[in-house]
View (cartoon, rainbow, N blue to C red):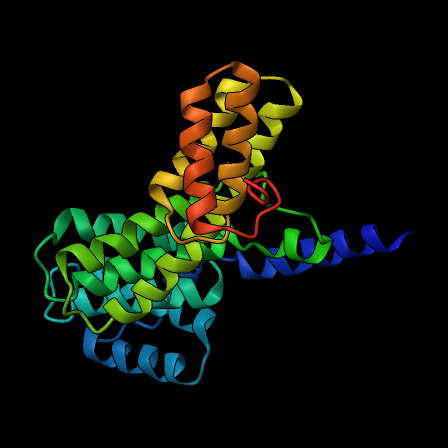
Length: 254
């Protein structure tokens, strides 16, 4: 058995553990107590990092006392427990339910923030990290979703305590999205689809200014416009490259 196979087997085992969610049977085993008494048990489990223990208790409160005084806080804690236990599918589903039923809740910024974190968790999944796979050419669907959530916080809740971290995460996500566009542009160049490659590169320049990928994008645009005979567009791209990256080999000596 080679190392790669061992990694996959080990990963499968741990993903199986992390992905466990509370079953109806687990919820039924929760003692028949008042909502407040159960919540104290759940908070104790959360405070001690026992997220898998907290999930069925919180789920029991949520199902038994859906309109109770602490129902919203229970759902917020359950979202957090799902995230910390690695059960992002259940967590995102609960987020969407919460936003649908409570769009004006005072903690809605937190809910968007947690969904953003869960989308990022899906993007940075353990399998590709362990296997050492280059992810730049994989469609960053989860990164785009995370970007939307963090941008929502900055747009609608700029004074939120989650805004500063959301801003930092947006910067990192922009880099991930730009990496994907560069990979896509190079893919099109390999297949001689130069117009498509140039459009991908132009997208980077327009929507990710200041990123490390802009220089490469401009080079791709110059090369593709030259092949396509679009002299004016090539000249404009070369001028932008010259002004912003004067040490680039493509503009030296001009």
